[in-house]
Image 1 (cartoon, helix red, strand yellow):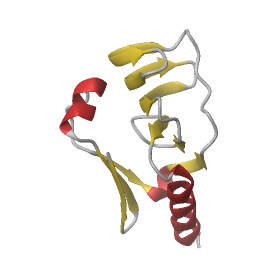
Image 2 (tube, rainbow, N blue to C red; image 1 turned 90 degrees about the vertical axis):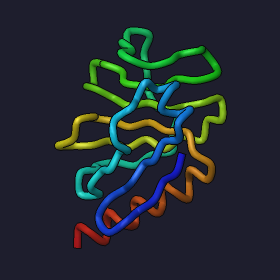
Image 3 (cartoon, helix red, strand yellow; image 1 turned 60 degrees about the horizontal axis):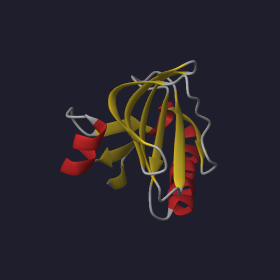
Length: 120
């Protein structure tokens, strides 16, 4: 998975295996920074009542794909790595995106800094 910030968007580019595990074959995720309302590195809240459709779930190994929750539609790509970056969104297809990424704290800080620049 590659994250990048270009102009006013966060780009999440999934490799072929990540797409297969997540059953996500659409274009890469491009989120306008102005649509991100919260960035967190805390372990995200989830429930056994979350409905996966489509995606993959192996407890303690991977949670990937689209999930329908009481919070709204979410995209997850989380592995045993942990190191979460959670994005709360508005005016987007997904209400929340949860990822496992190397250097999660650095990414969270970069995204937050760009959001602050856009709000000015």
